[in-house]
Amino acid sequence: MNIKIYKNGQGKNARLGTAISVFVVAALGCWILHRRLLMTDNPWIHSMIPAALCAVFAAVIYWLSNIPAVADFLIAAEGEIKKVSWSSRKEIAHSTVIVIFVVAVMAIGLGLVDLGFQVFFRDIVNLY
Image (cartoon, rainbow, N blue to C red; front, side, top):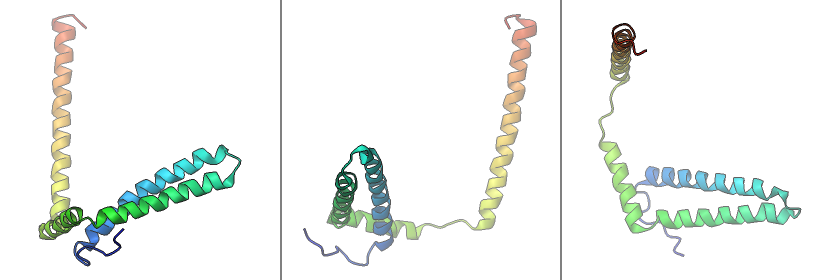
C-alpha cells in the first residue's frame, strides 16, 4: 500500500471532511457491531473484532482518498466551492422573511379554497 499522499496540500479541506464523514459512519457501524457482540462471553470477540474492522476501514478510507481520480475530484470540488459567491447575513435574513411570508399567504389561500370546497360539497351537492 502506498502511504504517500497524492498532491499533498491540495484539496485538503475536501479530502479531510470527506474522510472524517465516511470514518464516522464506519465507526458508528463498528460500535453497533460491538453492542451486538456484547452477548458473547469472550471480551476479545466483542472488543477486538470491531476495533480491527474499524482499523481496516480507516486504512481503506486513507487509500481511497489518495486514488488520483478521487483526489482530483475532491480537489476540483474544493476549488469550485471557493468560487461560490455567498450571500450576506442581511440578504439571507431578508430572503427568509419573504419566504415565510409567501408560505403563510399560500397556506391561508389554500385553507380558504379548502373551506370553499367543503361548503360547496356539504351545502350545495349534499355529499358530505
